[in-house]
Image 1 (cartoon, one colour):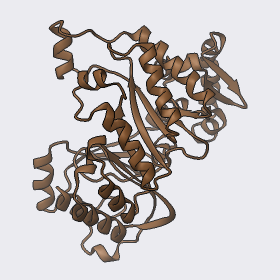
Image 2 (cartoon, helix red, strand yellow):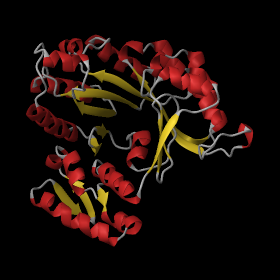
Image 3 (cartoon, helix red, strand yellow):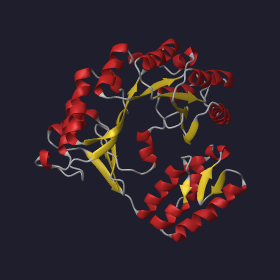
Image 4 (cartoon, one colour):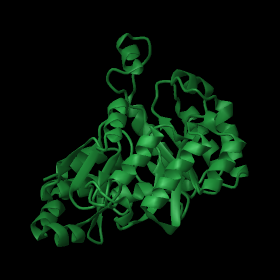
Length: 353
């Protein structure tokens, strides 16, 4: 897999066409690198180094580059932390999910509550000042008091960034089958909404910036990488299921099948699908992503890029949400209120063209 990912980088020029001579391809400058979408913390040092070497051969790297690696708590050791730091990783994203032992067991997570707590101390001791943890709310086992304890632990530990997600039940998963068989309780949307509102209240009081619906950060410690997605910047993805975007209208994603991906790369072909976004799709994507951020939807940007008629229509369409206190209109920007954040997807869908 590592060899295939490395080879994929060498097969593509900036426009995605196959390069006959890789050495003559102009190098683009990248501002962030993100190892994720799987479990990169299981990679050995030599394997990780191969990917770094290929990245640095293929791209110029910005001076203040942010390099994030996703890690499971049970993979984090003092030795690995020093290794990652030596390689240039300067940000970690840790899939904690919870500090509650019963909930972790119910989620079938490999790590324990003790490991969740211990890995934070190890990360800080290794000198990482920028790291994030994931927490999940709204599970049947999670009371508001348990949820408060999870969030309070984050605050007390001084964790700089937190990503929080409501538990969702995906079709055909073990959880979905257990709910269907009445072996466990299903999720409660009202409880999820209540816990999300409590989360915003607690983290705001603790000085965290709620800069995107699922993400909170201490001042100046937003995730640069994830922010680039919401800002519609260009990005490359390498590996099975990886997505790329040219920053304008072309989206590309590699096939999700590991074996077929490796076979294609070995034959010097990158197995991907692609779509070219229409102007309407580009506008709808901007509506969806911008509404999720603290900056909101910029009507002036819409006017300049898509035309005044669209900007006017959005102003008119958003009035009903303004009257119900779900959005506010400030300085030609449509911004979700805390109440509105509960309905973000629905509001965005209503504003789509």
